[in-house]
Amino acid sequence: MDKKLMALLACPVCKGDLKINDDKTELICYQDAMAFPIREGIPVMLATEARTLTTDERLHKH
Image 1 (tube, rainbow, N blue to C red):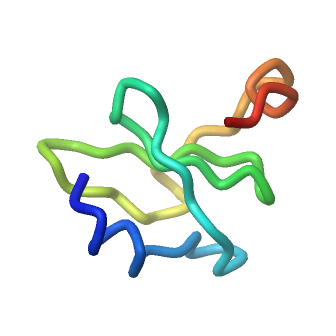
Image 2: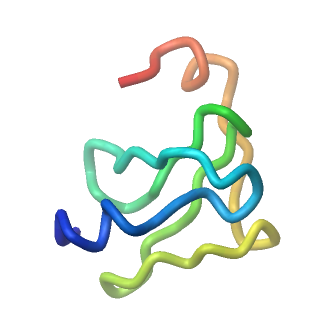
Image 3: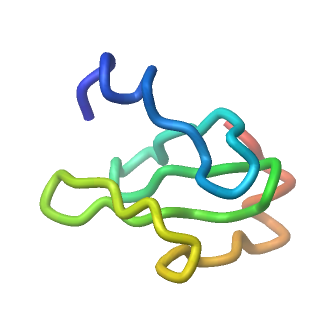
C-alpha cells in the first residue's frame, strides 16, 4: 500500500487512524475493532464489508 494513500485514509466509522496488517490484506481500526479488506490493491472502506477483530487481535495491537 502506498504510503501517501495510507496517510490520506481514515476509518469511515470514527475517522481514526488505520494500520495495515502484516500480510497487507486488511486495514485495521483498533478504535472500532474493525478490519477493512484490501481487494486487488484497493481498500474497501465500507463498514458493511469490514469484519470485527477477535479479542486476541484487539489485545495484540501493532
